Image (cartoon, rainbow, N blue to C red):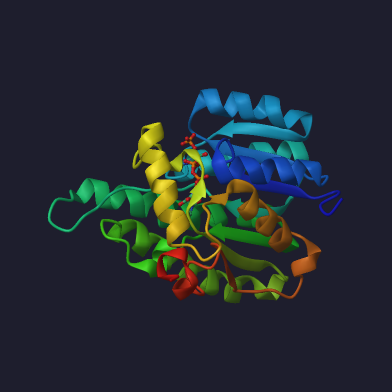
Length: 257
Ligand code: NDP
């Protein structure tokens, strides 16, 4: 058990990558507090994760609610050793037709929410803790229509490096996991039907050197590594879990003869 005796917070732990990570953390012996907004999926996740977990309703853009949830988690399980600031939203913001509200919602959730999650957790973190922020390949790929999302995830990378500098004196590590397209409910807006999803999956497989879409577990296992002592000397790093989409794009099936 790689996380025996550890306590973790996973924001957005009621769906997709966050839920897969929370399950893995519990299986590895951690006590886990998850947050999210959707009462139904929070209750389902609580049932699935069992008594080693607590599911708490908290909007990551609401600083007071985030602080209150963390306080509850710490009262139940003790001080935190791991924070996975994972909650995030996509959001289409094409040049020419984007409202200020739509742009700001993405930034508020994916950057401001992440910063204040870490700040709220800080007084409750043990020295030597591990913080992992969720980035994205979209911070570097230039996907059309994703300006706010790309900016938010590039911002996460920049912010992580600053946090790593600020928290090194306490031995606290801050790293980023940056997924490529992975099979989670995040795609329900962009690909709402089975046909649309299968077309999306095909496009992604063609542009990914390893020829497939990622799974939530691919990311969760990397987060587990960064959370664990196996990553004890990794600080301020970003690990892409993307089947080669950013590191070796020329190897994608679409370029093969
Ligand atoms: P999901 O849509 O499955 O999960 C998103 C999670 O974030 C949900 O649990 C959701 O909870 C939570 N969330 C969103 N907004 C808020 C908020 N304001 N307050 C609290 N919780 C919130 O998507 P993924 O699991 O795929 O996404 C997780 C992270 O991974 C995101 O940061 C995303 O940007 C990133 N990512 C995902 C990729 C993918 O292809 N899947 C690729 C690259 C990055 P609720 O529904 O209750 O609001």
